[in-house]
Image (tube, rainbow, N blue to C red; front, top):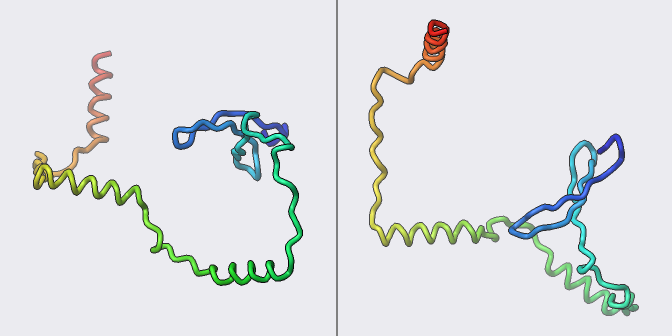
Length: 131
């Protein structure tokens, strides 16, 4: 794509919704650019009018309001709601069924893990004998 300076069209599914995308090469990686279907594009007549002039007093009020709302990013302030719902569901299921114990691990026979290389070599020798 990069050498020919061409792009491709594709359909991309995200959160159970299908999107029309343009696939192109950018700086050695593939990039997806979301496109719009013709039904989603508003005609020029439906667009709002251009910006109006704003007086200086309104601008200064807006700037002050923005400065007042600026704060440092605090990740603890935001929670993963999906994870919390899953944990609550698991706790509810545990209460309904009572304590659930993990099955005991069976002791493996032998002195340790099997020597896979030796087993492979043995099976290869057996195959060669049968041929």
